[in-house]
Length: 515
Image (cartoon, rainbow, N blue to C red; front, side):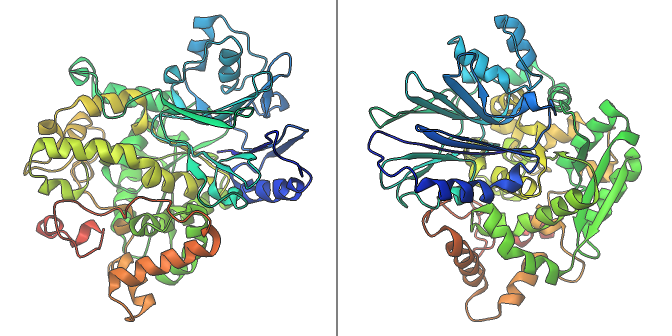
């Protein structure tokens, strides 16, 4: 991951000097995203800083901002463009570095930039000095974060994380929406927001023309683009196990390092060990106690920039695992299985969908909201330790396949969830892993004696009912740092179609007990 921060001055800004301290503080707040190199650019029109985590082209030529030949345009991009070589050949462009991100700048220079054609995980800002125009964009899902805001004097700020926008008007901080391009004209002080892709529309019968297994293998292969060592998170659930199996096929098992975490007696640890032994990876296990997990929650909420209950619960294990990888290994690029449950109706509550069409529509809604929940969790838990996340399930081709799949082929319908995915990977994993029932990351890390969510609730005592006290605690922790951005989520993530007493854990659903 990398960290972006820019502050652009409109003609109304009088006291630019006051922003010098803000600039340094803002960059410090996002430093963990890119600890390798910090580049600062200061002039009369803008202050821009880039915290780089060097992944491709480790030389200085890969540093950012990157400039056009006449220095009138600059680019800062947090991300990877996996099809940059194809785009370079198609448009006969010359790149001056080996950085995949440079392709965005060269396309923009030639007026050839079509964001919909970029295959990658990205968030970028382009400043065109001659036009006094700022262009912002994110990938289709919002795997990489980007925000913008306005200060009281109309200066325009851009950041990878909310925490660096602390000086902006509280009612004028916004997500750059996934699959959109946002443009800001500094002269007119006018914002335009245009979609380049519609997540709710699907290509008819896409799934009939492509093989899911092949698509996912190709998605994983393109994400091997890296000059730094690669590892893989392994929970022992279906999704991470599939990604791990593909990596072993592509790299050889001796070149794959896997990482799992849980409390003593955790099901995730048990199944992850089984997968690692079956595939032959170099496997690492991390144990944590309830006390260690609870002590980490304030730090987790700070990095998450969210108070959503299920997001916080699930983040603790992932955050601790990211910390272990950062401290004890050389791996910098980390593969993970995020996105599969949204794409293929994998959550247990899909068993209660009234109709297959309801399941399909719920899947589309979850995909559209990933950037505020699981994609956010994965980004922050990994980036806060100076690591980069790769999520093959969220490749554009895999997304198109899942969206085109009719609800009848995705909804459980009395069978096990994600059957199409399980069938596609028969033979690559042990059967008891391949057909293991869905268990959320926040549940799978639980020990034998007590679920992780009960450990949190026991810690909080009995002053309020269990749902209220947990949510209130997370909101209080959030407000200590982010009172200026009061609504990072539109709703608490909860199961649909079934009463769960305000507890988002899949383990409270009857269908889990039946298993």
